[in-house]
Image (tube, rainbow, N blue to C red; front, side, top):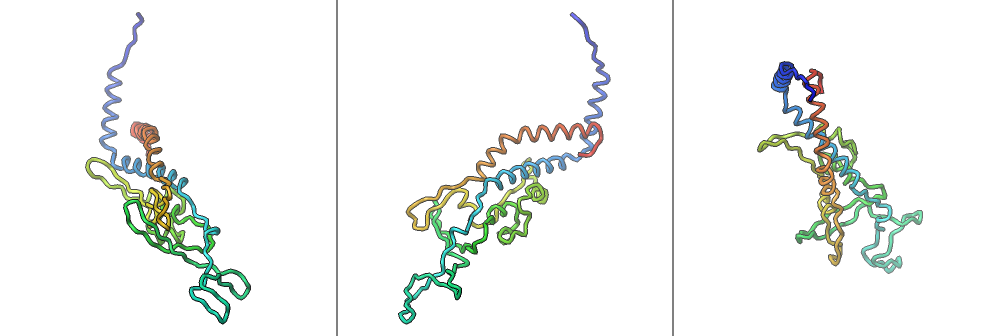
Length: 221
């Protein structure tokens, strides 16, 4: 059989350099960066899956609440402006019951504008920010980088929250307005989490490899 020689001294020297470099490196920064990258990936997935409401079709006409015999108006008749155009309510009442029996009520804007509040909610700190569009829009990476990473129970954690009040009902479903039917949930976050779980090992392995290369060569990551 052929023989090969291995320089054990060089391998030990490399091992010592690697151990020393790792000990001098702030690993917590690496873990935090990894958590934020996974959060950014999750946000990108869930934003893509989150439905955007189109209120053009859902606008409700403004109607009279009482009869007016002198004007020939009946309760429920549509109101018209001086130009003969049907008037629409700016807001409409939305109410339904969840699977757990909780009654939910809120006013929905029906201005005829394209929706997107729920989608913007993934990169917004508050529901008001999501509604106004003053957040980071669909910039998942920028928003993930702004999130706080915590360390608890031996694990680094980062929270992804949608502050829009009806987010959970779109996610898991809710009863119809007359409570005789059920609107199925979209499970945009649940499905995105499952997809990320299958992607995470490859993402982290690649990031770790790049990190170790940087440790050995002394370059910044």
